[in-house]
Image (cartoon, rainbow, N blue to C red):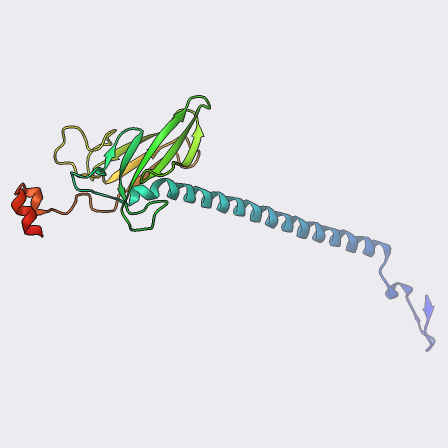
Length: 215
């Protein structure tokens, strides 16, 4: 007991915490700190996971765009010209306005091929533009990969134009790229441009008179 100046006595316990109270406060503080630290750890873990997922998604989208962009821009050529679209199981060629190396919107001849390196047991998607250097757009292990082609209706074809089909448009409506990539294993590309060249008078077989009319 402590005596006050007025002669009254008061309990000394009112001056501070008891040992038990101090221990309880320490335990509660420790628990709160642990919860806060654990919460921060979870937030950081989620942030890192989301960041990794976003980076992976961006890489997948970029890879898909690089592999398919030239095909999206395929346009038909006149039948007598060398750049009429031709497609086979492992190679395709034609004219595109979405070239990788050239200016956008300018028609340029291109060629894409799925090549296999037996020595390395590795396949790759090769791109050549206007007889220029070959660019590797993607590569994957093993011997895998093919192109397939489809009209607006019907089944997938290994060759375009389909053999014996006189009504098929010059370029397909859809091109499928199958590869050995982990994320872009199967890409379907929509060819948005016109699929037939604009009709000319000489296409009607009028000969020299048609040529003179057009001048």
